[in-house]
Image 1 (cartoon, rainbow, N blue to C red):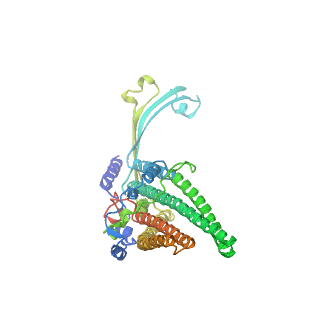
Image 2: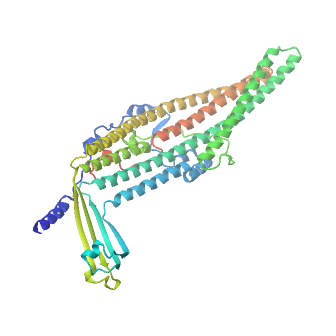
Length: 492
């Protein structure tokens, strides 16, 4: 009896002595393969040396208001509420939250309440009656008890599993933010693509009218034997080509409307009426001066990968804990009686305390393989993050390079357009004075309309590259915690 009492005391003492232990993946192993922040200083300096960029803040969460379009604002606001893809991402967050709550439950004792009412008829010649002849043949055993079961988390296994689940929830939140940014950016591009195509259709219709007037005048001169048939045939071919372009634009416009409606959470055939105009962009796009240092915290796709890697680091800690003893405590207290009248008597009380210790001796390499496999998953996640970091920096650098080119082309196109407009005005004056004929005017009008079409396309490219840069800069996302760049422990 003294030995049993000593053993019980030893087990309880070990429980309280080691309850603060925590096995985790060492910090240096978590961070040793992480790529350092990638410098974008050269691209930033080169961009700020131009007239198209200025030092400013990171994009705000509602960055689309910079385009000053009430129609676009309403569509994006509706998309962020009704888009099924975003709802799906939000549902994944809720799933991850409940999984984390489930993992947290293992940190606490589980208590159950049980009531049983057992009716039994014993064999007169059976074992129980042989040793207990006074035991009634018919019995009604009533049992009411509370049971407790507690896996004591000496080595932080359940803590690690809980924090891994929290990390996956954080990753889902970052992925949901990425989905929202992609939806808003895609809708913005589709919105301005629709406007651009509507304007181009109008301009091609004007070009068709000019060519039609040219064709009519050529036919008149041909009938008077003042012009050969070749110019009219060439003009007729151009009219056919323009008609094909207009028909192609009609198909693109329909596709733009379908995409906008679906992204906004509507049916594709929902009527969509918008103003046919392109408002000018701000003269300069803002670039944050801390671009290289804070790109990670501003990119939800990067943060999702970091949180996934951190979750796997906790999984490694949980896997390592399987090497150590598992201590379980079970307890029971209740009442048991064959008679209801005596059920709550002091003599009917029953109880049990059952500590248990389980130590792995030989598992044929199962635990080692599980640890190594989990570490491999962690390093795979780190390598995926490193690659995504490179891609993210490339996206920023590409957006800056393309932005400089597009804004420069737009500036030069504006000069060309003003020159052609001046030429049109001069030829109109010369035609009025009889110095030029209608053909000269029609020819320069065609050139003017073509230059307007090029100008509209460049304006659209300005919108596209602006949205591309906003996406590359994180679309207004901000993370105030980066787990693998801070000092922490197993309960981080």
